[in-house]
Image (cartoon, rainbow, N blue to C red):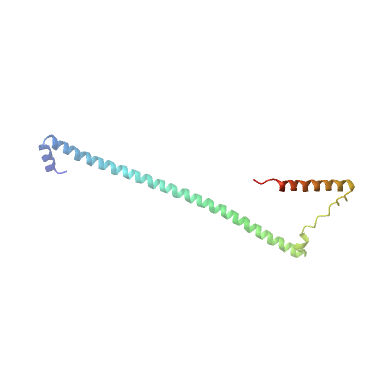
Length: 139
């Protein structure tokens, strides 16, 4: 601030001195805010750098996992190809590896007179039940 302005404000009395104080305070606050802003921007840059490093690590780990699974898949495919070659060399076909049908189970016993009577009674009871169900009044 120029000396002429300072002289003018000091000669103006208490209001001039107060105006001088306000100007001085404004300059100090501006300098403090600029320093605060610089520190804040430096922190943001540091956080951004850490975030980029973390993302890079995550991508590297993802690439390693995908690479491992791709290698396993290639190994399995080549393993199946080798197995097919061995089967062809031995003259075997894939039909011979089919599962044979299961043997037939024991035959059910032929119904005797008593079981035929029981079956008839059950059928009769089921018919009566169905008839009663049809005769019920519907709501």
